[in-house]
Length: 151
Image (cartoon, rainbow, N blue to C red; front, side):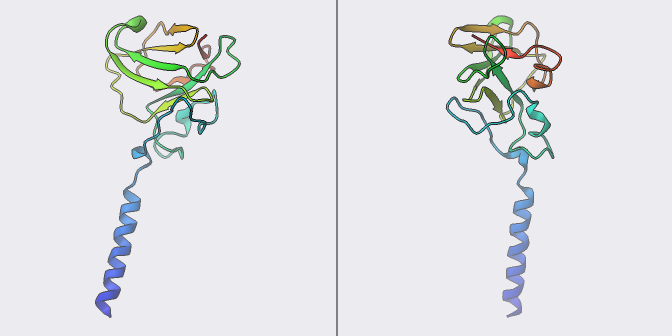
């Protein structure tokens, strides 16, 4: 009987250890065109989707795309990150914008010496004139700079 109790206790500790090793940073969370699971459009996603932040997964790049009036979220756009300006150089990553206008990924991205984002909508492509070295897009856009938008 003592051996059986010890095994139960050990397996209980093992399960507890397995659960405590599961990190929020290991959770995969990537936006998709037809998904509607995102929320808080226009907010800085990385306020919650970071270490000890409470959001599902730690986002590497995230933000919200709006229409040309910069009022209504724009679903179905695509965000691409290039090594060169205006869609030149190497395409490093592509992120789909969901039905609420949000885009996000927990996939690792090498920003190197900076990446050049572009946003592609049904009516054309918008190029960001400067490079990014981090992906908290809504930390600036909608706060200190205009919103991300496309046609």
